[in-house]
Length: 324
Ligand code: ACO
Image (tube, rainbow, N blue to C red; front, side, top):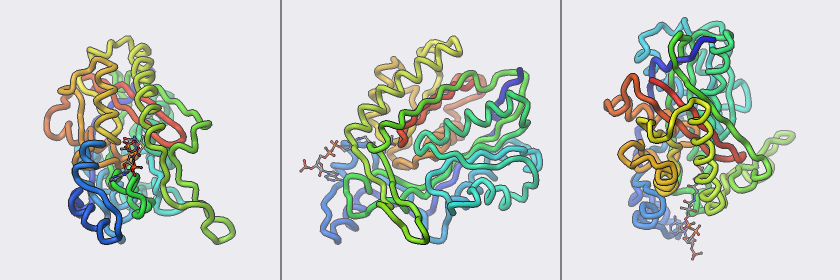
């Protein structure tokens, strides 16, 4: 059976950077108290990128995709599969993947969205890997893209300080050599209430609560235990010891979750990519954005073994182990 190999990476961030201090000043005008000190000590976040109102998820996704295609050195026509992970699509339908396909001028092949919130990118990567390994695609564009700040309640200081906007993309190509070594996905729908956005459209009216709501402590505990379990399972599948991993690229929600996970797995901090300080939590975009930063600055190199991990609403979590 062939493998799927990552041959290109790209990312995109909106222009507008909002530091914790600026956000705290903006919230103070509404009578909501927060501070850089509170946000940073609990999460590791220093700033986030916030998209202007005229920027859609598909715009950020297309920019990241163009850079990944250029990095891969392929022509966009070679792409026969687009899998895009988002919880903040441009529309209910058509899918954001189809909109990106049109913006890239690609005709033919399959294009669809997957929705697994902050686990979205590892779900999308696993889907594309399965298509390629089964012979159903040769060259896939996998994207995680969000305008997550659009679903935040800016009156809820417990959540509005945590998130940002952005996009990351990878190009996968069929290969005789590995490639994606192993994947491991999970969901526990009984935990759907701990992280949710329950708004919907019924007969032309928005019903329910259209803002993100979270039980932060429940999410924290579940994130650490589930990611540890998934990391061990994916390593076992690929017959690789956690200590042999060159880089861990976990979902960027909170530096305390990341550090706690690294300690449990025995992976030292210097092998863990952290971008939550600059990007905040960009949901499905966080893993490919973090990967792209470390790949472009030369830390992540060809031949290395990389563990990518996502966790989020659903509740969902999973891992992808990659030989670059
Ligand atoms: N600024 C100042 N004070 C705040 C803020 C804020 N932005 N937000 C909450 N507080 C206050 C609360 O009102 C509360 O005050 P009280 O004691 O007077 O009632 C106090 O701080 C403690 O609130 P908690 O919610 O208990 O704070 P906690 O220490 O649990 O930290 C946090 C909250 C950072 C969200 C933490 O639970 C956490 O890290 N959870 C993990 C969840 C996460 O990272 N989610 C991201 C999305 S999910 C994902 O991507 C997997």
